[in-house]
Length: 370
Image (tube, rainbow, N blue to C red; front, side, top):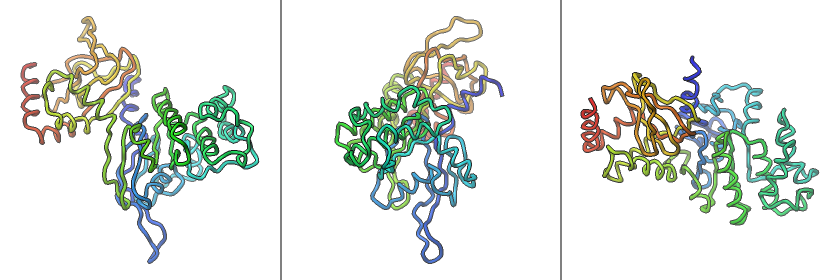
């Protein structure tokens, strides 16, 4: 494998991938199934909120993703590792990359607020969070700067919850799993928590956040909303991402004037990818398997030794050779860090099958470039 191929593989790998997941409590006549054929993918840097009535299986799914329960039937891949049949020691190691926020705070009663947070960083071998003062910084951001030395018994329920949140985030985990993290918090504290979570999601580690909640105040801050009912995912929508993708698609020449419903179908099929500055995304002359639109950032494109041209937000590049019957016509490289929206052959074919006007428009566009 060449070094150039590595970022492509990373960009396409979900942080969480659940397939055909079933789970039940008990056995025999006492057996009660709580999850049914659950399918879910969460991308790095996404903030996903899971809603649904009590008893719908949300917390069970959360604990399976967090390697706190054993996978019975199906597949759960977390941070690139399959949890089904994973040895206990490997599960323990995986949990070090996960920040857990529970409804019950689980604080050490004999330790102060800052000591509770430091316990999490002490368990990490490098102790980086403790050395750089991140433990006290997080507590101050959560409004607990004057409570660092207080024991849990000296704190209110909401304050204890904020200590637990700081403890979960102190090591910049790659995955954050939260069960009703803002239930005991006022509006201002809840907003501070969501801002902090988004900062981690947008940061260099692109932390992935999955929140189980009934708190309607959080809905507008989610990249995606997953709704569970009776052990099944009944809806999976990306309001914030869909808006960003639709805006970018609306700027592409071949989609100018296309209907909002078609744009929405395209947006729902597109995958978000993040590419670092300098990454080569497509190569001239290759058989293309995805088409791309730039959502944020700037790329440069060139053919052979030609002078590079700028590829701005909203411009499409790359090709799906099996549809266009054309090879990739130019090399495209990230000039800055990029947020890209890409679509595969299979997903594009499904959209084209539902919109003959779009199909005809794209075929005319390709014919004009042959």
